[in-house]
Amino acid sequence: MNFRFIIKFGPFLLALLFGAIVVPYWHVSRAEEVNLVQEEEELLLFVEEGCPHCRKVEEFITENSLDDKVDIRDIRADSGDAALYNEMCDEAGIPLTERGFPLLFEGESFYQGSEEIIKHFGGKFAIPVDDYIDDTQDSDQENSEEIDNYSDNVVIAILGIGVLISLIFLFLYSKGKK
Image (tube, rainbow, N blue to C red):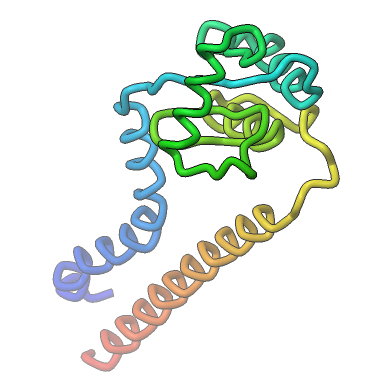
């Protein structure tokens, strides 16, 4: 093989290979770094005594030792908590007809319903949630994740094919120069 060809095109090929392999996954590691630096916001959970969905979330919190991370407020036990609940719902723009329990506030975000809250905790604290979630859940989110994974694989395949075509072209070009 011609060494001038390697010296001339070697750095380009290495850069192309690096871009095809590393760049598609770089954004994932950067996102994880940013999340590690973010300041933790207060988790405020509103529940109502006797609510089975609230009990499910409270059991999840207890079983996964999250008691010290979540401030649980029972609106029936304290009228001040009921007032705070309504105030926070008003600020979040939740209409009176759509307010329910359990309801979790984290900074500017809110999560309503046991499954949504448990999924949020599972993602936030890296806790498996399969045992706590009903099997009849909507599969829209799962389908969306499958499409995202499929899209990533297509992009990687296209980049790989591009690298392969470039290598073949450069090989044939170098053979023609001899």
